[in-house]
Image 1 (cartoon, protein in one colour):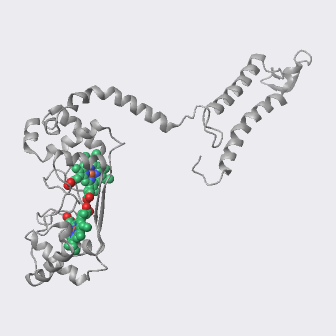
Image 2 (cartoon, helix red, strand yellow):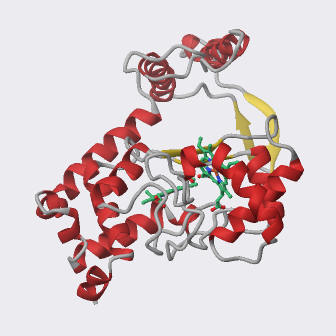
Image 3 (cartoon, helix red, strand yellow):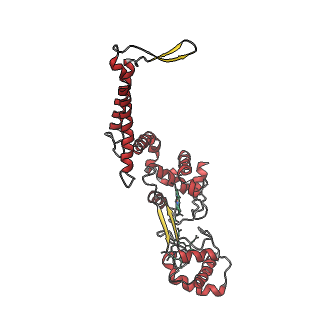
Length: 307
Ligand code: HEC
Ligand code: HEC
């Protein structure tokens, strides 16, 4: 309720909720023939069906009246304890989000023993354990496959996690850090300092770094531009920097593509790419299982051991 800017809807809902109960009580009161029970004679209403089926105006039984009022009291009690009257949070301050959280905590408590076996094991060892790899794969399919693909081979700007090529490093600690805290890859835009023609030359040089077809005449000025603007992050040889997530430009592996047009677009407009932090979404145990599984993808010994 607190999402609304004005409190109008809060009152609107409050009036409907409480007004509804008040209406029910009033309705009973307005039909209070039961009060005069014994005084008033039972009359027929003049409605007759099937020849002899006569409708009488008997008052409702007392037990029914008591039940009816009892239900109104229960309704008021529920509105007092739980949210229901506009933005009033209820005495118990219940929310569905809190309930989900509590269920999650209980579930994590229940599956804790499964993870306990792996807590003291180094990640590289967990990666060699067949059961652990199965758990890791399931976690990956549930939490990561929507971006990295069910085979972890990525697509488009979502990196392949199985090719042994790393933006942020492939040591267990680096993978743990990536998953726990997330990453924000940022290549700044250069359109204010680099003209499109110059960017095209630099793109030719970048293509030459991984042995792609390039124009030798344009590679020379291109290298000059690269040395001025790009080496700070991508390194003098273009081999990248895992501390910044600057990709290696010499390995023939591309997040965005290797055509001149794509590279020019990267240079002029920059690129932003976010790996969302899993801290708070997954437990530390789950993140370790994932890191082990991901590490195992590009470390043959773990793959072989698990088969
Ligand atoms: C919303 C999409 C998304 C989800 C979900 C996601 N990732 Fe990522 N991940 C990315 C992007 C995008 C990058 C690249 C970031 C960059 O370029 O700076 C990345 C990068 C990574 C890297 C670093 C790769 C490298 O080369 O250094 C690892 C490891 C990784 N993700 C693992 C995971 C795991 C494990 C999960 C599941 C818990 C996961 N990701 C879930 C989008 C996602
Ligand atoms: C401040 C650091 C920084 C500088 C300076 C920088 N880059 Fe980048 N570059 C990055 C990062 C980080 C990425 C990865 C972005 C991502 O994760 O999406 C990137 C990505 C790229 C890509 C995409 C690679 C792929 O796999 O598709 C190319 C090409 C590139 N840079 C070329 C250049 C060129 C050419 C220059 C000089 C004009 C340059 N960069 C300057 C940080 C930098």
